[in-house]
Structure formats: C-alpha cells, structure tokens
Amino acid sequence: MNTLLDNIKVEKYQVNQCEECTHILYDTDSREAVIIDCGVYYENERRRFLNFIEQNNLRPVRLLLTHAHHDHVCGNDLVYERFGLLPEVHEADRPLMTGHLLLRIDEFYNHHYPYPIPMPEHYLTDGEIIQFGNHVLKVIHTPGHSPGSVFFYCEKAGIAFSGDTLFCRDIGRTNLPFGSEIDIVNSLDYITHLLPDDTIILPGHGKKSTIGDEKLFNSQLEYPLF
Image 1 (cartoon, helix red, strand yellow):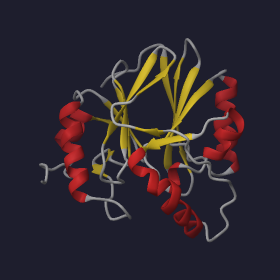
Image 2 (spheres, rainbow, N blue to C red):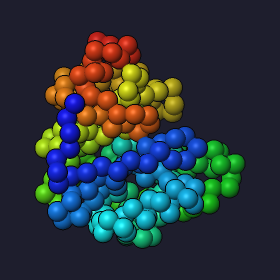
Image 3 (tube, rainbow, N blue to C red):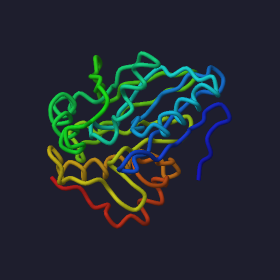
Image 4 (cartoon, rainbow, N blue to C red):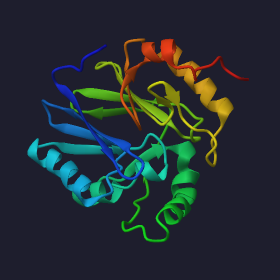
C-alpha cells in the first residue's frame, strides 16, 4: 500500500450520528489545507477539529464536498465562520444542495437543526484542478450515489477521496433521491480502470482501502450497465 509523501498529510475524523468521515488534507511545507466533507456536528467534534487546525498552524483554503448529503455538511457553518470558506460541490448536485438537502436536514433533525447551512458560490466541474500548497487534487465525476458525486484524486500522493461512491468492500447506496444504480456501476467501472491499483481510497464512511484490493475483494463491483 502507498504511503503519503513527507510533505502531505491527512487527518481523519469519524463524526456525527452517521459516523461520517471528515478529512483534512494538508501540505506540511505551506500549511495550506483542504477540508473534505466536513460533517462535525457535536460540540466535542467541532472543538477537536478546530484545535487540530490551530495547533498545527494550518490555513484552510478550500471546503470540498464529495456530494451534497446531510451527514457530509454539518460542519460547513463552522468552516465558513472561522475561515470564510463556502462549500464547493459538483454542479450536478446543485438541486440537492439548494433544495432536497434542506428538506432532508429538517426531517432528520425533527425541525431542530441548530446551525445555518451555507450555500456554494462556486460549483465544481469534472476535471477541475484544486491547488493547495505544492499539491493538486483533480475532480473526477462519479455519479450514482448522487448525480454530482465525485472523487478527489491526488496523483502525486497516490490517494483518492471517494465519498460514498466506493467503500472498503462495499459501494454507495442508490436508493436515495436522485440515486442511480446504472450510473454508479458505470462510475465504479470507470474509476477502477482509471486509477492505479495502489491508489489509497479514503471513503466517506469506514476504513481506507486501495483500488487493487477493491477490485479483488469487493463483491459489489460489477461490469458496467448500458
């Protein structure tokens, strides 16, 4: 399995009621960081998250979403308040972000969600490059779990943030609003052929894996549907 480069690190938090994985990816030279799927909800999670950023002198420069589901956005208000960053999600999830997400949060929290919900000013596109420090992430559109689900891929470090598209020994649900079984199967076929087998996968729930291990051991991966 790959190891990260000396000058790029990942900090992971498993948070909120859904045990979502929030990641901070940062360049140790410049201290610039990107925050991916900030789901910190409880006060102790929020304090731990902020303390890590402050104690390591990090400077967050982007707030990225692999998709616009409620468990991946609980900390967006905190990031906006402290660092002035608005969330960025793929254009195809705009209807989810601006409509269904609000209804889902209201329903999930029984009309008592305690935080504001910042909206994007910039929507991501397939192939877009995100710069932080001396590193880049590439946006790879992988619809299925949601229309705008993406991978964030750092080729230099050999890592990819897969959101809820690909898990260790599992794949994302498609029975949620706007999900598509055909799309996710085709996305998984595409991504598992595109990325090298030793690419480390950091999903939105659960433990990490590699592309190669998932191709060998993930019984949910199938041939594409057309």
